[in-house]
Length: 202
Image 1: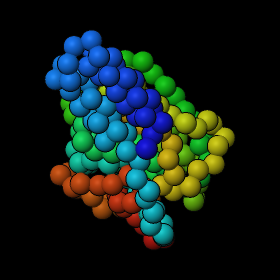
Image 2: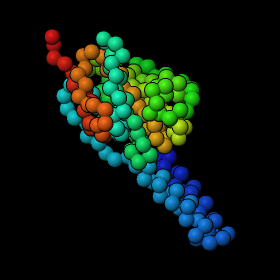
Image 3: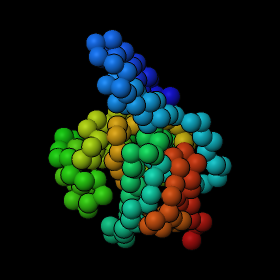
């Protein structure tokens, strides 16, 4: 479990106990229900990354779109709802070359405009002979992006690197050396589901 979830759950449980002491258990039930939801929402299951020249999903959720941005770049967008695991993981192994946080709006994350206008955090990983970036995007409910690593840190494929609190979206940007193997509507699991495979030498 993510530590933040335990803190939220304990705070809501304590508030519920205080309300119960002042009034009655029925009034405290919503607070205790909120505590239970926090324990569920901030779950952090173990995942095992696949072997081979592959890129894995950085987030749990549904593939929202696969868009070619030009001859050299494809974007895979993954939308997380409130019931998905919200821990984000590295799509490939390598060294974190850049981390760029940008303030912005809080539009519905599934909208195309959200990719550029919403608050976001873009991370570039260099390794395994390639360069892959991903962008954590805040949404209408998600109001906090968390990223644990810094430029220069080395990460393994599927390693935990951060989270977005309470539903949002992660975009992955892959170069022409990658063959995309997911389609819009597919469900993926962070750190386990393969979203792209390296192409062989031409």
